[in-house]
Length: 121
Image 1: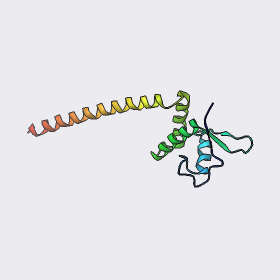
Image 2 (image 1 turned 60 degrees about the horizontal axis):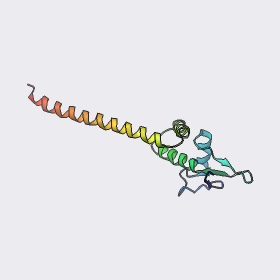
Image 3 (image 1 turned 90 degrees about the horizontal axis):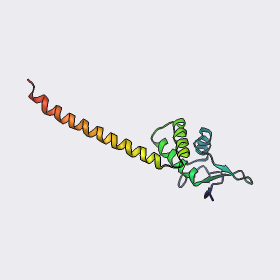
Image 4 (image 1 turned 135 degrees about the vertical axis):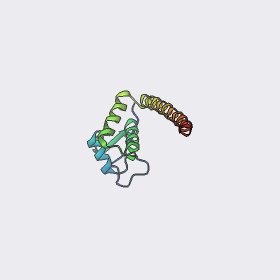
């Protein structure tokens, strides 16, 4: 059974525990394909599953980083397709390892260049 978080027409000031913040943001993210909540048949309210909350948290972080909604929708879609964030976390860890190695190589090259330049006439 899927656990759900019923959020009846997310109030405009509900930024405390809900990552999307306002109802307008939820609607915008729905239009962009970032969120896909189910609807309660009786009330028409959005009902968010745990995966929807995960997607909203991811979208919130990416928006804070300045990413456009279209790019966020692509990332969230890939996370949904992968079934979670585990493969994304692995990819990010690999990317961070490569960036660290590149940064260390650049620092080493800068140190060698710094030692070499004073010896030139």
